[in-house]
Image (tube, rainbow, N blue to C red; front, side, top):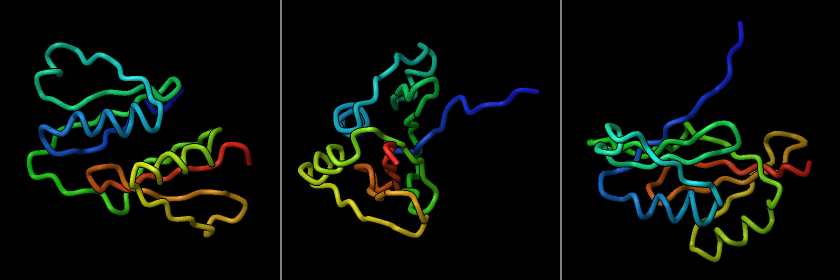
Length: 120
């Protein structure tokens, strides 16, 4: 048997796709993928993360995920942290995972996002 993660979905409120694209596309540097026609009608956006994907999906009764989160391992850790801070996003260091340099931030919808230094 073979198993791998195909994608993760992060909820967002309706009509906020431009904010999602600015955060996930512009700030994080993910490449937006075209959604299949039938799914595009639902809103949201899809992004490539290597061979996997992050899907932003509309949730009618949206509430941000404050504990559940996706973690991105990045090679440009300090640069990304500076870009997020310059854009007004809080970046909170966390040393609870010994040997891992990481910080937490939130996307524009309040969902928790972990950023891990890929150079460690």
